[in-house]
Structure formats: structure tokens, C-alpha cells
Length: 225
Image 1 (cartoon, helix red, strand yellow):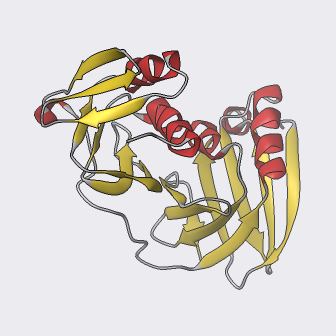
Image 2 (image 1 turned 60 degrees about the vertical axis):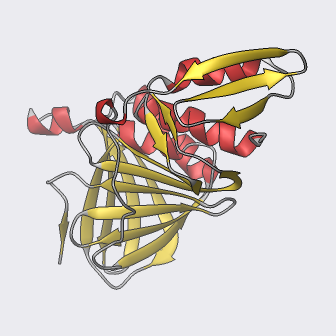
């Protein structure tokens, strides 16, 4: 089999969250972080005919990238990454050593739905770095939704922080505050999303241009009315 560029790009993104992965037989790639508060799920056009267990995804991807048009030949405990007369034997990890989600995630409720463009997400991440902000807040009052980037540490210390704000076009029927650490939102860079919030403090970020979703928990400071 050959892996598409899109699948390889998603694997690279997943490696930022968790260096290891178990790819079950089929076409779904799923991983989660060590704290189990972020789950990434991708439905690929590539079909894996056998389970693949990778301990270090960056190492695996580096090997694949050495070749121009690599092919994967899958076996029970290893795979060959090959092209022409060259090949690398890549040994799979023990499944017991790998941190993995056992099944897909389903939101307990869908209370807020909005749209975020790739450009908006990029600005949020850039501004958070400039303002030394580690939390991004989605705040709704009276139907209008604003995204606020500010240094929460300064607020805790009773100092007025610099802030960046975006007012979204979407209107919602719920007043809420949904807080996310910026590290989690960096996983959404490069794509536009349909974003769904549950009042159980979990969100789904569904990419508009591919079958990729990120399930991200909110901070405990979040609230819905």
C-alpha cells in the first residue's frame, strides 16, 4: 500500500499529541494525549489491511520521507517500507506499551455550533504568543459570540492584561464561557472547522476539508447557562 500525503500529514499532526499509535485494520486513525483530554480521529482513504503499532511516529515518518514513492508491506509484527530494491524493516511495538483510545468519542449533547476559519485560528494562535496568553476564551452573552485571548495569570494577579478579541458572525441561543489552553488549539492550525460545544465541557472540531475531527475538553473554568 502507499500512504497519501493527507494521511502522512495527519500522522505528523498526531505525533505532536502522542508519539505512539495503534492503527487498527481498516481506515480509521485515532489517538489521544497522555491526559486523555484530547482525542484526534481521522477517516483515511487509505486502507490498512493489518494492524500497525508504532512506538515513535516521528521515526516512522522520517523513514517514509527518505523515499520518493514508498510502499508499505504489512505483516503481523513488522512492516517493510520499500521502494525498488531498497527496503526498511520496521518492527512494531508491543500493544501494551502504547497509550490509545479504545473507541470513538460522541458528544453527550450539542448545545452550541459555530464556524471558525483557518485564518481566524492562525490569528488566535499568533496573538496568544505575542500576548503571552495560555488560555483562549469563547464567550457568549445575548447570542453574540466573542473569542478573547488574554493573559489569565495577569487577571489572577489583579492586573489588567492586554487582550485580543474576535466577534463571530454566528449567533447562538446559549450564554456560556468556554476556555481552552492554547496548546490544544494549536492542533487545529491549517484548516477551517465546524465547532460544536457540549455543556458537559467537551467540544468537537470537525475539519471542513477532510474527514478529521478533534475532541477537546474545556477547562474547568468553563460554564454554560
